[in-house]
Image (cartoon, rainbow, N blue to C red; front, side):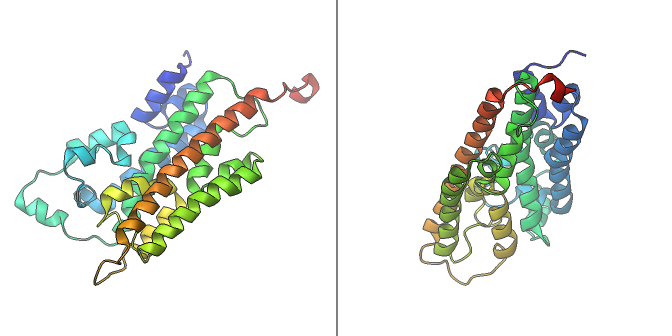
Length: 263
């Protein structure tokens, strides 16, 4: 079977994560893409049901289409088709909190972010520019999402890792501080969370550990905290893209292996 072009590989990965990697002869990466790009969504949705789509501001289509889950196009479309109708009983059930919903909803959001990363990985692999011994751009972007700056560290760019990752984490921590720990909460601040999930592991920990905490009144600088944590997420997109392109550049400039080494 003919290998897909880079554009087609990216499109296939967005429709069904892992499908392009199968065509590219990368079964292990295909399995990882399927487990993270689809499996995490299915797990979170199974635990939450339609409650996943019932958080404040999410049901209107304008916001629903911005959810990170939409990046896994095939899964999101199927979920939309299987959603319950807006009957009074269903709407009542959708407003009832579910145990662990901060964790489960993070997993579904993470599946969309990971679907994008896998699409970029497939695009690069289909281009055939990778040299053995170098970090794949998709891997650099992935670890940058998990821990801001980690991709640059993996690529040997320690100064950039500390500068870019440190700036992102500083903004995120300031957001938590100004909001007194309540900045990351998909249940009550779902529109802001769309950007915050881009901060990876810090957002996951903040949402799961601090999101469920109750508060009697909003902190005085709550809005500022939300904004800073969200800006940190979008800043991490810049970090991820830079790590991806840097890995591409380093891979393209790597010398060809000697025949003896290749043997």
